[in-house]
Amino acid sequence: MVRLVQAGYTDQLLLSHDICVKMQLRRYGLNGYAHVLENIAPMLRHFGVTSAQIRTMTVENPPVCSLSDRECGFSWRPCRHENQKKSL
Image (cartoon, rainbow, N blue to C red; front, side):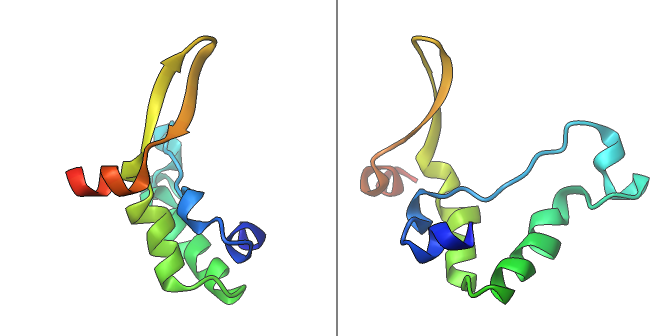
């Protein structure tokens, strides 16, 4: 991910995770929903990714992605970044 950010792809990256079983929650001993912000973000900062770039990948980019049901199932496709931001 650091190399992709350094190559200028920040606006096309989405940094997230999911919780699919309750055993991943903090109350059961794992990192829970805070994993990206408490563990991954500091590691990325250590390798030179800025807080602004992390914010772009975690806050600004997710709304411009949409799930499209086409031909052979689901696939991610980016929306027009400028048009999507205007409608938020």
